[in-house]
Structures are given as structure tokens and as C-alpha cells.
Image (cartoon, rainbow, N blue to C red; front, top):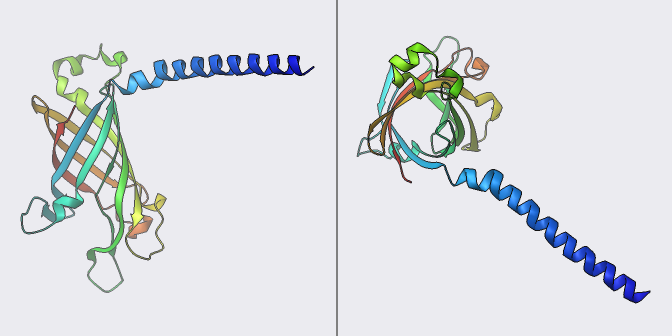
Length: 206
């Protein structure tokens, strides 16, 4: 009986190892190989313009530049996932008083997603995209903050932002980026969307 048990355990071990290798190969072929085809993007937002407030983020006398760095992974020139050191704010708005712009610092980082809207092959027959190929670089964006800066009652989901942008290749691996984003739910800011227009520059590392 012990002999049969040993044979059964040996057979199970060999089958398990073979099955494990087969699963790993499928994962490698389906996902890891696709990941190896992606690119790493490093980007800095140099200028912000929000509701009449302009900010030059590359001012050498401030550390704002460090709070506007983004790193993302680009899948098949279409989908970008990444994290950023961009801070999230809300205004202080009270009846009878002037609003305090960015008076409440909420979160210190964001996770973002960007999707190139016209990157799919089904848009190849669209004439305007063929005549103006730069339009293929338009992307939809969504970001969700994390890393609470101070004690407050605003959740990460309340601070989600959506928007769109255009990324343009300047030369080789260098890109210029212009994007606009706003709060998905303006209730966090008493009905004001806090729309932000940003100009940034990025480099494809590899």
C-alpha cells in the first residue's frame, strides 16, 4: 500500500510541476511578453493655470517641481498607468468671505490612467485623423489621489479628477503635453469644478 501511495505522490508532484510550468508559460506569453513591449514615461508639469491662478512650477526658488513629477508605463502606445507626486487641494469657501484658493491640502500623490482615444485600428478610415495625425495623440485621463496630507473628511473617491489631453512628440524621445482636468464631483469644492490646464514635458526613458 505504501508503494502505491509513493507512486501516487510522485505522479502528483510531476503533474503539478508540469501544470505549473504550463500556467507560467501562458502567463509569460499573455502578459509578461506584452509588458516587455511597453515604455516608461517620465513627465513634469511645468505650468498650471487654474481659475485665474497661474503657477510656474519650475521656479528654482520653490520645491513645487518635486510635487509635479509623474512616472507611467505605456502599453502598446495606447494605455498609460502611473503614479504622480501631484498634490490634491480643495478651496476654502465660506459665505461672506473671499474664497481661499487651494486652502486645504488633501492628498500628496495620485494614481492616474490615460487612454489614447483614437489609437484603435477602427479609426484608420476616419479622414480627419489621417489629415491631422496629431489628433491621434488625444487621450482621456482619470486620476485618484492617495496619501492623506492632513486630517480631513474628504475621501479619495470625492477627489477623483477626469479630463483629456494631447501629447506631441518634439524630437526623439521628448514630448510636450497639454491637458485639462477637473473634479468629477464638484460637491467637495462647493460646486466649483477646479478645472486645471497644465503644460508639461516628458521623456520616454526606454
